[in-house]
Length: 456
Image (cartoon, rainbow, N blue to C red; front, top):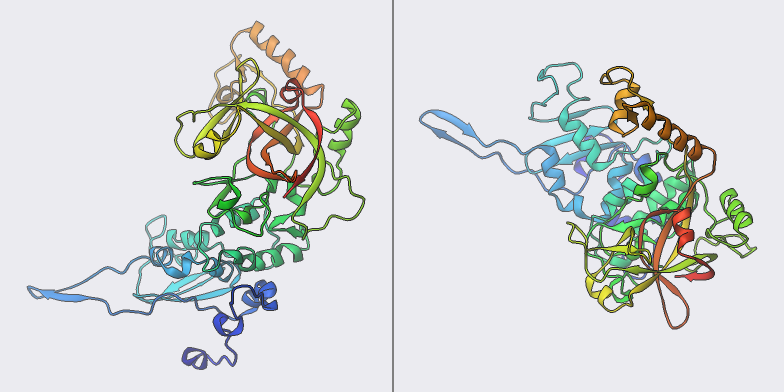
């Protein structure tokens, strides 16, 4: 309050006083936090109070300890570890950090401090842009994900924000979406790519949004999930998550990539891809809502038709580092993908697990092969072709590759994203884990059947 008076500000917002945080209650103000933080003149995070700089005189020489970097002070603070403060950092226009060593000022244009000399890329601490292009300033802006109010959230920005947010802790685990409300407000009010959210997932990217994966420690038993949230949402998982779905390796080597991550999938509303596949194969292969009523974002149960198959999953992990990963194989033993899950849970399940298609995407045409008639210099198209295995040194191999490439470009190709599910005695399905996409041709060899799914 004293600082506010010194800089002639009449009003002060204190979260703890203005927003009662009681378990089981939701204050209406939490749905307006993006407006509150972005509209504030400045924000003062609850970091530690300044301490004196320790010093000593040794043989007539005055020595003082070095101040830690602002990056270190922020990253190691309790403030940075709390889930509720994520939106405070992300939406504030100007921030004053009162740390144990000194005071810092940070905004979207520049950065100043009391004592430190900034380290700049070319080593010139007196450069005119020293406070905007310093290594420290870029690290800080990247760390707290400063939001620019006149820009829409970029493609991938939502996913990165969730990944950073889920690394933080909450005093009440059930506040997982309440403390995320500012981001939801930001997304829903975005004029360019605004999207309604359902349990934290944007409807306009719902198919790809369902593809989140635990960063570590995953047991799909319901008792290990956050109560009151659907298994298909990242909000049900207690721990950090990430998005890493890729085009399957066998498809990627033949070239091409996903046409787009954007657009509402069939679970929200039927797409052109859904219609194409259903008319071509006379059955549902991709997920399609069958209800004629509008999609209800607050309904935790998704109801849709799709295709499913029971596929053999290895009993033992494959030994790679990270989360325990189990091979998924066809009937002939050929590996078609992998599934990450808890070994203890896997031991209790049958050899074959149920997988459903939860999203589809069209693949773009691959890059054409090239013939190495002359050296492939760095930076040239031939160099890029060489690095991606599309450069051929003999005429015969080149012509074969061209023929294969023309064949791929002559037809539509699709990639299907799979979700392993378990079904309860009431028929309600729960998400176990998602796995890397599979090509449509591979999926058809597994003889999938049309199913109705209630996913909760």
